[in-house]
Length: 304
Image (tube, rainbow, N blue to C red; front, side, top):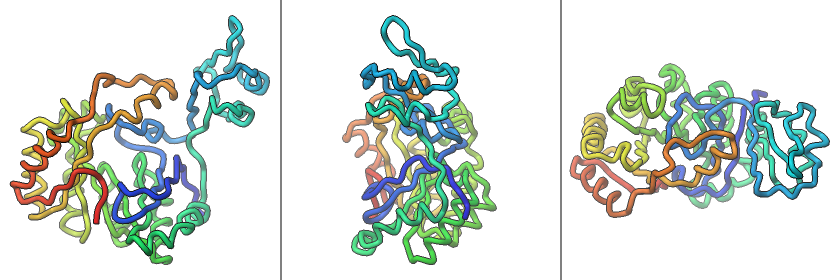
């Protein structure tokens, strides 16, 4: 069976498609959004989350680290991330939860077993499984096999995508996907590249094909104050999506600061520390403008 790199399998999710769902987060993403709240999902391979505030100074990690990445200095333990080889030895002995490996190799069979545990909830609520990330399509062989297995089990499937993916593969998986959750962030390609690392032409082209050729696509727009909530960008998004399909469903996802601490735990710098969540009044204003264009707009990520 094919293996995948999994960050997390979240049970009882209600924000990633209809009903009660299991969301499978896959590692790896072609974008590097400055506001990303899941930075641990961006890179392939295992990474180490480090929470020094939990350390009780037992010294077990110092004893087992084979690479000299942990040293004793002035009576305290110091972590030298540059020397860490992410072997996980320290995580195995740390019972205070200071260190945690992010990214686990799992087979299709193992992930499917976790999904099937909650089939009764899917059946009762109209839910299913959502493949997210990172970008789920970055692990194409694994994703395709998961979708095929879920189809055999008659489990509703959703795929969340940033759209910066291979169109041919998108076409391949479309027959096995019940619902696409398609992120759309910025209409100006230069600004999109400056803030996410890639231009947006491919994203717009793929969305155009998908809306025309798949029965169930929800466009999701993260609202990032000062980044993409200006009148021009909102209008351009509305006009573009409306041009694809009248009455298209569009969800507004308010930015939140839940992932900010993860950057420090990963040894990275968060570039937008002053950013705040948008107010409900502003979200209602944006929703109203988009609804005037004939779109079906909802604030939040759930769906009926």
